[in-house]
Amino acid sequence: MPLQRRLPKRGFKSTATPFKAEVRLSDLEALPLTEIDLLSLKQAGVIGQLAKVVRVIFCGELTKKITTKGLIVTKGAKVAIEALGGTVA
Image (cartoon, rainbow, N blue to C red):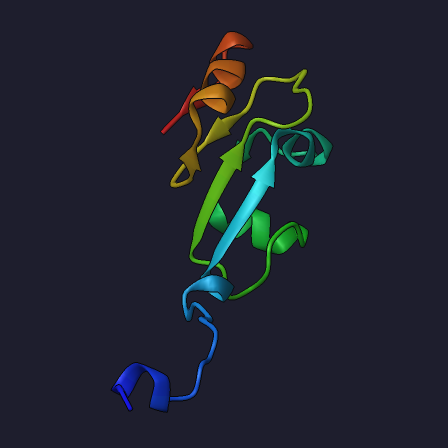
């Protein structure tokens, strides 16, 4: 019998999952901060304490000027942030 049939079938579980987080623009809108980085998101309780990489996604509306530092920002979210005069660093 071939090896691939003899071995048990198991699923895949990524070990990097607890270290990644996604934040919507509507979550950033709810924060009382204008400068947003990894530490401020952890202190506000928006992301978990284990998160090391944060991605800002374009979901919801943003009505205030914000500055992001050290976060990954999608194209749509970058356009929305810069349209209000904010910066992405």
